[in-house]
Each structure stands twice: as C-alpha cells, then as structure tokens.
Length: 279
Ligand SMILES: Nc1ncnc2c1ncn2[C@@H]1O[C@H](COP(=O)(O)OP(=O)(O)OP(=O)(O)O)[C@@H](O)[C@H]1O
Ligand SMILES: [Mg+2]
Image 1 (cartoon, protein in one colour):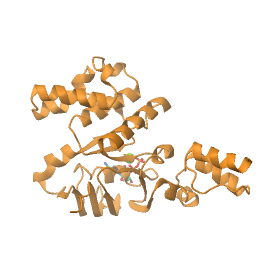
Image 2 (cartoon, rainbow, N blue to C red):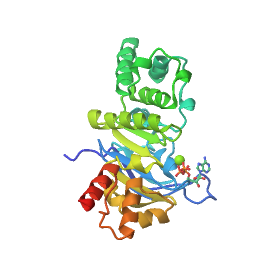
Image 3 (cartoon, protein in one colour):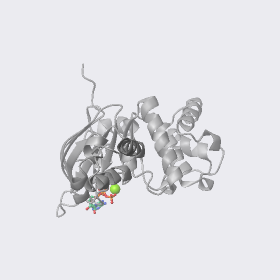
Image 4 (cartoon, rainbow, N blue to C red):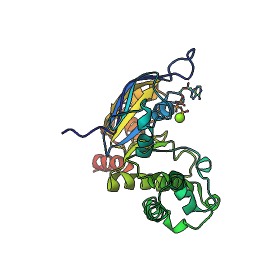
C-alpha cells in the first residue's frame, strides 16, 4: 500500500477578501512523510497564507488540503490535524507564554489535559530533542533569540507532531542562533523522521532541504532538488530571489570564462571545484 502523503494541497485557492486577488492561486503540492521541504518566494507571494492551510488555520476557498488524507474542511478532523502539524513562527517572543522554560514547553499539554506523569516525560524528551534541556529552569526572557526559538520548537515537539511547519523561524536570529535552530530542525527531520516544511528567505538554509518549492504571486513556479532549483540563477533573480553565495560565485566565475559547475550550492562544493581548476 502506498503511504499517505503528509500534506496534499490540490488546486488550493484563497483570498482574504472577495475583492482582493488570490493570495494563494491554484497551488498543487505534495509533501511526503519524512521530507524536508523549503518554500521560497518574494515578500507577499503567499507562502505564509499557504502554510496556514497546512494545519487548518485557514481553509481553502476552492480546492482541497489533505493532512494524512484528512480534509482540513471537516471539523471532526481539526483536533487530529492540529496535533499532527505544528507551527513555529518568526517572533520567539510572541510564542512564549510562561516564566520558566519547562513550564512553557508544558503549556499546550496542560491545556489538553494530558496526565502530569506523561507531561513530565514528554517535555523532558522534547527539551532534549530541541537541545534546550540544560536551560529548563531558566526564565525564557533571559535566553538568546535562538534559544527562545528552540523553546518554541520544544513546545511544539511535546505535542508529538508528525510535521513541523516553520514560517521564517530563523528570520529574527543572529547567525549563531540561526545555525543552532537549523541544526535542531535537521536533527528532528533526520533522526526522528519528522516532516519539515521551512519557509525561509535564507538560501543557505533552503540548500539543506531535500526539495525546494518556489512561489510567485500565489503560484508554484519552480520545484526540485536544491541543485536543480539553484541552477536556475536567472529565473530566481527574475523572481527577486537570491541563490546561495557559493552558487553566485560559481556563476560569476563561469561568466568570466572559468569552467565551474552549474550545481555548486555549498561553499565546500565551490571550493572543491575551484581547487580542481587550479590543479
Ligand atoms: N491578514 C491579511 N489580510 C489581508 N491580506 C493579507 C493578510 N495576510 C496577508 N495578506 C496579503 O496576502 C498576500 C500574501 O501574503 P503572505 O503573508 O501569505 O505572503 P508571504 O509570501 O508569506 O510574504 P512574506 O515573505 O512577506 O512573509 C499579500 O498580498 C499580503 O498582503
Ligand atoms: Mg510570510
């Protein structure tokens, strides 16, 4: 039997008001279990609006969103969908509710009436997975942005979701915080099989995904592995998007006549290609 897709969006249309253009304009997208998908696109192209359909915060005006084959429009699935698909947003301060880290991680579980002994084991596990166990007795407001964001991730992980949606979860962080959050996300994906959908404006982050989906004006315009997507430098630039610095450098060296590969996406690959040329 074929495994159910984690998320399946079919011809999804959504607009905020009837007189407005569609913010999501006929999107088809399948996210398989265990995948790490990055979503790219210029400001206002509909990334956040689409992602809010993935746990029924928004419902399509036309088309369908299925979460493990459950239609988000059917209210009886709402609880299961929200439990399966967790969301982490941009601003860590807006996501923290308690004055002690472990209480914050426990917050949603307490509201759901999970028994105390189970809460204890789940939050310990979640704090370990998010790499913040050593801060569990601290006040969240004393933590760095990256640490706070990992507290928010732990709070979502404690719900034992199958899928994590990150809407620019690293955008407000410094480079070190960003790298640590990315490392946590990769760990959750690779070691625990949690499906990840990461909306980002950082191309180096998107380069770490299994697959990239590029949106423009409410539509999916390009899709493929990071190497496939980032080899389309001109198309991405025309969509007001960057490529990883390594890709940009390789492209400029190619333009200057050097025989650099088109699919360099990491610094390491770029350095290796250069070393080969110099040898
Ligand atoms: N609550 C809202 N009410 C009305 N219009 C909205 C609302 N939220 C978003 N929009 C509009 O819908 C369109 C898509 O916005 P959305 O926030 O989904 O884009 P985005 O790709 O996430 O952008 P960004 O990269 O800036 O986060 C934009 O034109 C935006 O102005
Ligand atoms: Mg957004």
